[in-house]
Length: 335
Image (cartoon, rainbow, N blue to C red; front, side):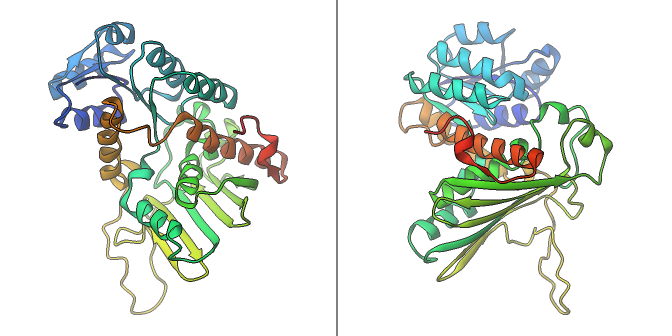
């Protein structure tokens, strides 16, 4: 199988390496609007090089992976679908709700499989939590806590195009909540604040966010995010039920110290980035995408799934801006 990859940044270079190592992949071909970046990745990993996406798609590739910046996702996804090539796209599939809806409609009328990169669906902890919920092991679920806490903020140039903390960080939480619990969000109430660099506020964003989500079955979900978690990268999910509770991310790398005397958990070392935290999950999702491209399995995370997560993020941004609860029925794109 020949796989084309558009986007030679950090995540693109990592995905290229992962794909190149898979037995089912014969060749990986890389391109980027920054030709020097694409050439560096191709030469350092022994990959093929294409001058542009059009040439790559016309060369007869069997699968297409999109790892560019957010603004490149939608146009490249359209190109992949138009070419009839199974496509993997990092989140989000588009920068706006309107464009995400448009893409969901496009893919729904096409036979081309599209796999959206929500890697937490392939993390062993989240899979175990899903099993515990779906099997009834925990009884009815009443409360869930989900957090995405970055150890340090991204560079200033990233924030104006990020979509805001709920669309950029917590969208992963919104997707995994649906995956683990199997229940849709009914309403949200969100807020946020800034105590860090001025460039967050200057872009109309916040460096710390929080939201209370009410699900359609009355489960309460407490969501938080921050760009300043100096103790380490901290992504967790806690599911509390009638008969038991389970936590994802509660291992020796937990970026939290106990204040209780005599307690030495966690032992460390901490993790410092999302790449470190989810390395096995990233590899597992691309392995599965190759199976999708081969026609062996359907997409495990569709554009329709991505739209639902984006709608929740959109509701949170509206709630933060207007300082009021927002029902998901106010947000366009409902199934």
